[in-house]
Image 1 (cartoon, chains in turn yellow, green):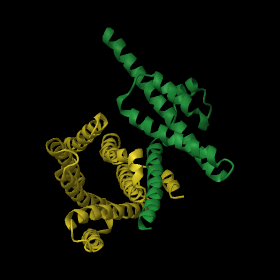
Image 2: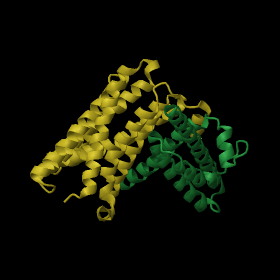
Image 3: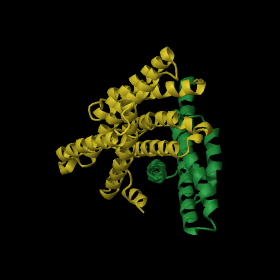
Image 4: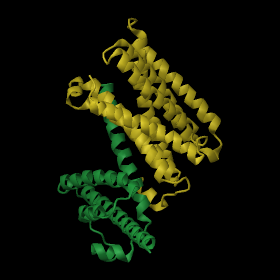
Length: 233
Length: 136
């Protein structure tokens, strides 16, 4: 059973996701951050759909389980394209977009194949187990990719404040989500001690951080080079 | 075993991303020069703002009329400051270099709060001028 806090987080997440898309449209930057906006738009639809499924079928139903994991899996694939988009922005001057896209598709297929290998020995409920496994693996691949992206930003002395903050917010989201999944696998009992609140909070964190970045950090804003280099130490 | 490895890597990455995110917010305020007005109000001389001034400065910030767009920043930096203070007291005897780094970061948080105070004072003055003009 969900309580008022769950509803509040749901609503906050939906409104923030919608806000990011609308503010991008208003500023005429929708196309520049196309994948990010598509992700936010889909996340908003998924959030409202989740609410609908919860009300019609209940929290414990199979429909809710399938809807939650399938749409979450799809959102992770979309999020993956957002990370690739950030890579393309960082390496824009090197004209290596084609190679980045190719490597990304191979990595995505490899992650899906690895997830299949993990679950194929248990044919019963193969699809539902596959989607959960794929989600966890994509999450961890997301952490690694974002970490490599962050290392590239430091190495290239990237000063675009907005890009830096968008990537860091994504890094916080991916690493915290992967950590929660791993903690859940290691100590399932933690679910009763507050761990269940972390995923919904993280679901609100990402649109909140991105909404903040788009609102407060102008596109032309630059970080001080020296200050930025200090972070590498 | 794999879950434990993922857990350790994720938590380490999370801490690094979180610290870097807070520092990127602080970095924006470092280029701002404090006005004489705010130095006078806070009693800060030169560029020396103490790491322990943070809470005092935030209290002063809250005395000024609220500016809707800086509340999130102040909360995020406040959380970062609390973590740093805990780290500083925990490491003061065990790892003095980590404690010194945390103090340096706390000083930047205080500078950030002073910049926020400066902005709010300017905002209040603008409001006052605006109201005076409207009355005339």
